[in-house]
Image (cartoon, rainbow, N blue to C red; front, top):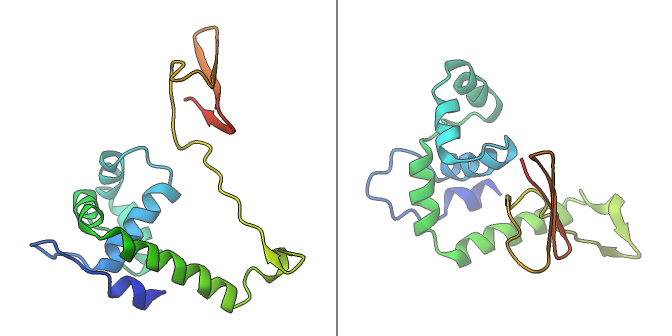
Amino acid sequence: MSQDLITLPDSRQRKQYHTQELWLAGITMFMFKKGSRNAYNNERKDPLFRNNYNKLFGLSLPHMDSVDDFFRELPEQKLEKVKVNMGSHLIRKKVLEAWKFRDYYIVTIDRTGISTFDHKHCEMSEVAIIKSELTNLTSGRFQIRLE
């Protein structure tokens, strides 16, 4: 997997960060549940956070505008190739073996928390607002948490 990340094309003019650092920063922004690039940049300014990030991952923490520039310019098929290779690696190393069902890998995608709304955005939505507090909203088959 690491080789896939290193060899991702980088069309940015100023290349202050390696592709691994940009890729990981994009992933960790979601892992750490930061709501925006700006929120993650604010966290990035904290010396303790930067030090812990570096100790944990062994990489620098790039500015999130650089991460955004990198992903906007990255051809979609290159990103898809990395995802396929990562999945293949997990299967090859038998990491998922314990979760096979009748010789098949079952894949589910949890999209809860991806989108938030404070209003009914479509006919399939159900909005429940109780005592001015935002609660849960269900859109189609996905549950969305309003905060």
